[in-house]
Image (cartoon, helix red, strand yellow):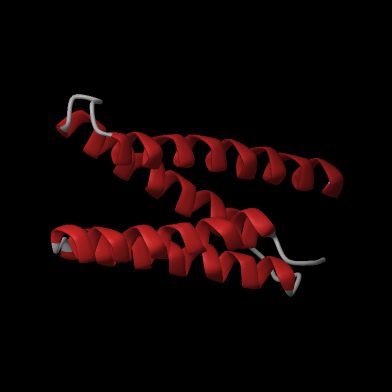
Length: 110
């Protein structure tokens, strides 16, 4: 199996987002959150590339964390700021993608 491009791209986006949040606003939570999510997606990508176990599940967990972070920040800003909405949208889309992918793999194993 080749590189899982969605997890690779999400890893890069999360790292860039965390670094941007830190450089623009001095937000340490953004830095650690972005780099942490990037690490999860990057690890999932590596596991899937090497045909290891639980790569899809790890990507799904990272997506749920991204979704929850976006939801929490969206509530705090009354759904008015673009960055929390972007986190929420990425979490929903990637979560749906990896949930579907996990379902397909489980069906194929039956």
